[in-house]
Length: 192
Image (cartoon, rainbow, N blue to C red):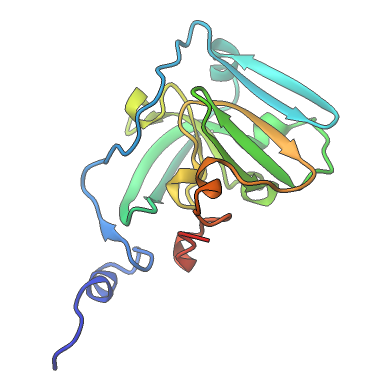
């Protein structure tokens, strides 16, 4: 039988790969950005009712989580069984009240990406600082990046500076350039 053997064959070979993804052994770097200094680094979180911030020392003193999960880039590569360490976004939101349903993640360097709060809370997202047992390298978003592994990796903003809740949704950087507003790799939500 003659037919296509591309993505479908790869998926049959490993059902952990979402549609259209291939298994990557390396860790591609697709963007360049700043190298925030942890001596002056600050993470900010704001809702309509208040805000808080953490220095690097304050952030590292928060309860830490170890995460083993797969990651998926919109450019079609996936890595399976990766290991990360960081702080749950749930921990950052503890005690903060919001009626907002959306958030904008903002990075040092000006990058932004929008997410529903439902994709950040409930054990679904972290701010990570360690990858495979080593401090997160700057080219991968170190010293800390947002980590939302159930969505394409452009939603896991590198060099995270802050998260601001929003009453209504509005697009971030790539979403303004035609990327899908949500980014679920299992639904191939790549482009709008």
